[in-house]
Length: 236
Length: 43
Length: 220
Image (cartoon, rainbow over all chains, first blue to last red):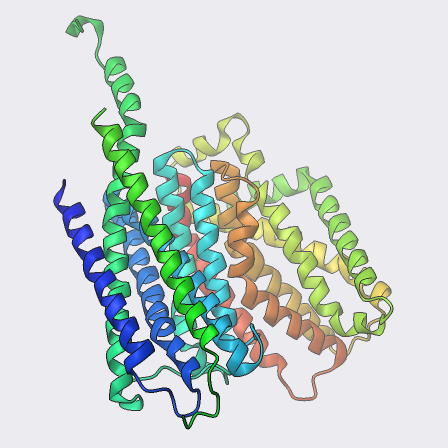
């Protein structure tokens, strides 16, 4: 087993344990919110998902710029892994938000700035996965996806700032100062849990993608070698 | 319970359940494809 | 090769394919016609939503326009030859984007009479309407030309262009629909300037970003 896989599996273990403990505290130990009651507990999974989704897309931006500058395949493997994870997290984010919205706002979905910008972000990054799936050559897949990622990333700060820029139904970001101490702990634990899960999954996905690409390019590289060698060099 | 909004646990459990289940499914698929890729490499 | 020469090349290509521009106009007119059926029996809604329908029609036309805007360049390896010359890639981008902009602007202008006829619209501010058309179409073709290159040069599949372009230009659709509606129906609150500035900012950001990133799309 390679080191990256070992670290990845370790991260996954930490993430699963943290998520279990954090969710237990959030669901059982933490007090219900004074206004929102028990429904507020959805925040213990919703807020960590939101933080990590934005973080993952930002790592994807780093991988995209990294690929365009260095042309290293490792960057592309990370980019693909981050795109998958970011789309998964953002899709979950929208679903959790809808589940939260029904009992509190009375509707599953509202065309509020934060929800709208998040939906746009989800569609944009899902589109990049479709772009990748449509391109055969690994090098063009990597370059074009990097370009599209840089354009799509612009939505990330807009999603983050949307609740401040426009009057929104969605509440603004909470800080430990605005939240009861008993609520901070499960929030933090789940945030780190989802971060460790994301990192562990990324390391495993990156390894898988690397192996798959090598398997794809191996026959190609072999045939190029045989073409390059002239008969005089004596290929036996 | 002083909450204006009480109960609605079914919403809480669906949010946690959906998240956990999706992450587990993706994790399972990741492990499956990774194993297959490692085996493929070793021939 | 200078930007001027490249622009000349791309405008000549547009002229040579006049039929395509006409088809796009016919396509846009068909979309406007289809929308007029969706509001029945409350057809008075058409005059309220007409501005938005125009932009949806133009957006759909953009996807078709950009997707094959690089096709003539690839005949007989012309684009490969161009790339061998010491021409900065962003010049190729800006020439092509300007040509696409011209086509979309013309399509938009020719759709206006149809819009007025089908939806029974008033017109309060001609200048505002022209500003909306100029700035809005620029916002659509800027990133559109970049994604069109992905489709035309790399065969990323026609469906990918709308998948990437449509969510990205949502701000353009919102702002130009608002600006168009305000210029048609009147602007008592003086909101037009804000939407116009938003469009201008979007155009500036996405034209420069697409110009910079275009090199990465054609190089590979």
